[in-house]
Each structure stands twice: as structure tokens, then as C-alpha cells.
Image (cartoon, helix red, strand yellow):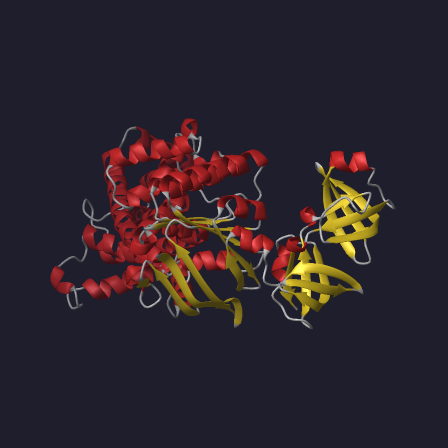
Length: 358
Length: 228
């Protein structure tokens, strides 16, 4: 059952929509990641869900209660959630008192507060900092205090706005560990905004892609990353091979697509004559030096335009009559001698192609 | 010039020997100013928070009016309180005229704009994210206001001290509604005024020194707070 639902939710700022027609459904226990570029409206949506701002239009239904009808439920409903903002805000008091705040505001007994704060500080690895003023902490530590403060109240719904943005790798790892542990142990519902797609993929079971104030696609990480519904979503989720084509033949659901005069075979339900974008993830492309070594339906001869080392991988840009980007390990690139100008064969399966209507 | 030095010497003697009259007048001044300031703080801190946290039409105008009243002349407040509490006034029946109580009431009127305006300014100086974070963590409006006030505590304390400074240093109001009655409503400022007119410069100077000492303590406290 959905614990949070939004119906045609919209928000205007100076007569301009910052959020429009958001229809979202988050089930209890879901970890829902909102991904999208900066300015997509993720923070605006989280603020609305936390009832910090009133929407210009549409409704928010929390656990069956339409909270946009009246604000009489605001405090009760807000006390069932916690919101961690992108910029860690800590109060000018000790770390212990910071984490205890939400519990004190819920009038919990001092013994309970002591126990819960102790446990939560242990979880985030800040037990030794309990008596330190929170203002003296580093950005990563302050964010861990903010997360501890949110978790201490045992919220049903945890809202996270870019919880690891601008933090050092160690802090990111620690915060992701805490979130993974909490999600697994407490079966908490999480709605988190992130522009780190790997984080969304790693933590969430559902993802929503937002752009320009609109929710373009929701689905499982697999749906979003392998079957984006539009070119914008495909570009955002890192599908770098997006080619224009037209279906010229069908054999069952095996389509023959004309791309720049070259035929590509893909699995598609679209009919002959349909203009489509074909999407191929770089990691689904195999590069070989001879053309007859793979069983893939699509094999194209081409030449490397640029081989660039990025961390442990090589990004190989090739021209096969159309541009293609493939990814190979550093070891493979060295063994095969994949350097600029080298002739190669690029192969990919028909099932590796996702075609979307243009 | 020699007379002045003699007067100054005598004033210091009155102070260091804890002259009964000097102590009595100083004690009353401090008591009246402290009482009026405490009452004003009890009014201004919640009222300032209410104004700061509420959204209403005319809020900016109201704050401008409060700020304008910072410099209201003490005699104007004195006249207002006099009319209010004189025997023919609407509150004349309370029979408070020429008592320390009416002086306290007058000082509350006098200090309220300063303390209220500075409290609102102090709350404005706190990052909005503090109250927003509190609300997002389940604080009620009152609880969010309390934590915001806590973050503004040094600035709010400055507002209270400024109010105390205005209360203890005023003379017009104390003369008009207190009557400068010896042993009853005579304060540092009214006594200085009277003793100077009588030509008792030594006593006037001694009382003036107490007033300067109070001002010094206020300034030192403010400086310490601002350094935090």
C-alpha cells in the first residue's frame, strides 16, 4: 500500500512552474531514489512531501490522509517523517543534544532519549563526539549528526536530499553504510534525491527520473538504466550511444533498423516505417580485432577515433559508419593495442539494443 | 577648578564609604530598572518571536513603527503614563501615581520598542534553516521558536541589556510620574538633577559616578557578548 502518493502535484515560483504534474506512489518499505540534474525539482518535491511548503496545485496523500486539504494534521504527519537536507544543518549545542532534539520534541522519557541517542551515535560512528559542540564538526561529521538526528526518532519515512553531496569519499562510504544498514534493519521507507546515479542504483528499489520539474519515468533501477522511455532520460542515465534510425523490416519482434544506411538488428515491438532512437550501453559493446569471433547479430568494422583512459577503464570512441562509444578494461586495451587509428570490430547483441519511438 | 576637584574627592569618599543615601538611591534605581526590564523581556521575547514567525499584512510597517519608537522622548512616555494614572485618568483609581510601581510601568512602555525591535532583529539574524530543520524534525511552531531564540540568545541578551541601559538612564519619566520623593521614588537620575539644582555637586557627582559605573558594566558585558 502506498504510504506517500501525489496527484498532479505542482509548485509555482513567480508564476513559473518549478514542479508540474507529479504523480508519484511510494509504497511502505520502498527506497525511492529521485535522480535528475540540478534544478530538476527534486528538493522542491521533497520539501512538499515533508510539508515544509504548500503546493500550488495537486494533492499529497500520506497514509491515506489528504494532507493538502487542511493543515491540522501537519504536525502529527511530520512527526512520522524525518528530513535530512543537502546542506547539513546542526544546532549550536552538543552532538548528543542535537540527536536528542527530535525525541525531546516528541516528549520522550529522558532514559529512552539517552538510550536511543547512544545507539544512533554508535550507528553513525560518532559515540566519541557526544559532548562536542556540533558546530565544530567537519562537513561529513555534521551530515552524520543530521542523519543520526533524523534516524533517532524512528521515522516511518526518511526523506534525504543529496545526503552525500560535496562530501569526501570516506564520509560518503560511511553514510552509505549507515543507510544500507538502516534500510535493511528497520524496513524504513526512504525517498532520496541524488544526482549520483550509482548511489540511486545501489540503494534504491525504485527510481524516478526528474527533469525540468517533471517526473519523466519511474520504475526499477533495471527499467530506468536499461529501458529509458525518452532520449532525455537515456542521456541522463549515461547511455552514450543514441542513434537515429528507421525500422525497415520485421521478423517477429526482430527488427531491422536503418542507421545512416547501415542496418542494425534489434528486438523491438515498433512497426515498419517507425522512426526510432536506438540506445546501446557502452558496456554492452564488445571490441575485437577480427570480425568473426562473436555470435552477436550486429558486428561493424570501424576505426578508433579516440582512446581515453578514465580510471581503471578505457573509453574507446570509434567510427563504424556511425559513432560508437565502448568501454574496455585497461588490461584488454593494452593487450589488444587499442590506440587511436586502430581498426576494430564492434559487436553487440540484438537484445542489447533498446529502441524508443522518436 | 579647585572646587571641582574637591567635589570629585568628596564624591569618591561618599562612594567608598558606602554613604547611606547614595546606596539607597542607587539600589532603588537598579531595582526599578531591573524590574521593568524583566517585565519587558517577558513581554518582548514571546511577542518578538510571534511577530518574527508570523506572516501578516503590514508586518514591515509594524516593524518600522517599532523602530521609530526607539527614540521616543522619555517625557512623551512620562506624559502618556501621567495622563493614564493621574487621579482623573482612566487608571487613576489604582492610586499608583508617584509610586515606584508606576515608574516601572512607565519604563516598560519606554523600553518595549527597543527590546522588541532588537529581539525581532536578533531572530532575523538566525539562519532560517535552523527553524526549518527543527520543523522538519517534528518541532511544533513553539518548539521551533524556542530553538531559534536559543540560537539568537546573545543578540537577544544584547537587546535586554540595551533596554536596561535606557531604563536606568532616563530622567524625564521618573520625574513626571515618580515625583522624586526622597526615600520612596528618588532614583539616580532624579537625584542628580535635584542635587545639581540645589548646588550639592559632591552628591550629584557621586551619583553620576554610580551611573557611569553601571554604564561601564553594561558596555563591558555587551563587548564580551559580541566577541563570542
